[in-house]
Length: 135
Image (cartoon, rainbow, N blue to C red; front, side, top):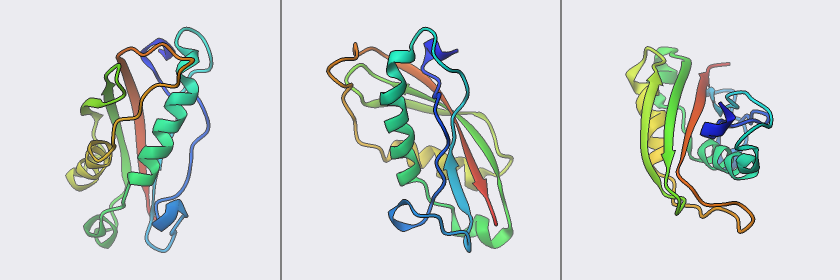
């Protein structure tokens, strides 16, 4: 599935201000979806940067922390050749609308990011799991 732009590098923890973990309030992770190399592997650096940007945008909702909610939201993100996000959808819910909505909103807040000059711009469909975990 790397041809469809699945993220292939290691997960990033965080969720607090400045991207640092705030375990007293829970963490939100944008984690890799699997796959290493193969068709589409040249997009790995670009997609790694996308995951970092998502991680920086994620916020663990206060209402979810107060209610002790956690879960994984699987998203499908559509990226246009100009680097703009043209769509985001929940493909597998966390079973908590507040977490699903927070993950979708993190994607919608992202500004466009052009592809690097050494990568052919094209539309990508990316699957990204977002984990909300209380600690």
